[in-house]
Amino acid sequence: MKNEMFSEGSFLSFRIADESFAVNVNQILHIQDMCHITHVPLAPECVLGIINLRGNALPVIDLRKKINAKLFPFTLNTTIIVFEFIIDSIKSYLGAVVDQVDDVIQISKSQILPTPDFGLETNKSYIIGFFHHHEKIIMTMDILKVFEDLLNIETI
Image (cartoon, rainbow, N blue to C red):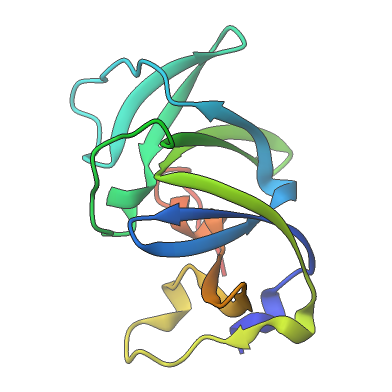
């Protein structure tokens, strides 16, 4: 069951198109207002380019494209979530564009509903589970699994 991988605690909720997602705040370094993104030629389609974050070039991914979500034009609510990954003692950073950041929510394991079997290759799925919050369903996301191909790693 996927929610066995779930780690309870604080989660940042955000929206992509009409859907709500949440990721563990321990994976987040920074929340950045939308800014100019410098295009990088020949980058994968989901890579929007790079931005300057504290004097470093940060790759920025369109998370909406990465998960094949509906694409809305950027608005004043469009945000870049900067994620920090530690893989084999090496820190990596990626920015992910989302349509809107909502709230930080406390979630316990008992609140998580298991991911239904969609008949897909579920061992590669980035959805850990679901929970109800203010009359909507929020999907908890394994952000490392979403970006594993871009970070040149394989998750289990």
